[in-house]
Length: 128
Image (cartoon, rainbow, N blue to C red; front, side, top):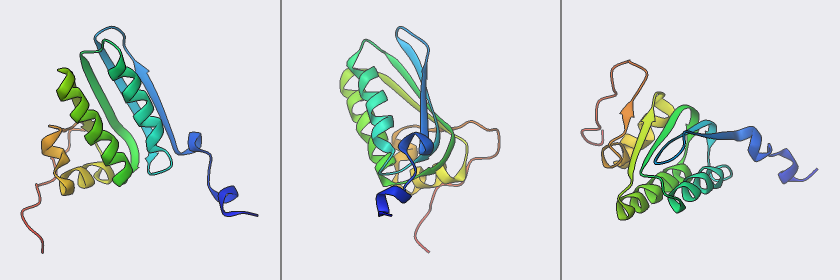
């Protein structure tokens, strides 16, 4: 048995659905976004930004894990969206997603919003 045979298939880690058409679309991700599965999200966002989309909402409400690879995908999509004049919104609901976004400063940069109705986590004030 090799190490690669122990890793779950990418489709078991994350699923990405695109809904809507025309200038406004919603990208909904579910599962884990890590170095293995982040390219799936990147591919969907790049495809949309290659088209005539003007408004993209990235719904991470069903994401259970987000690491630096996923953060890089979101940052790259944001940079590209700004250059193209596309509005990019990021929505999150779990601490597993909100906290990494906050710690890296992406929460504010992306103007992310918490969508589950519970109070937002306080911004990090300093290192303890």
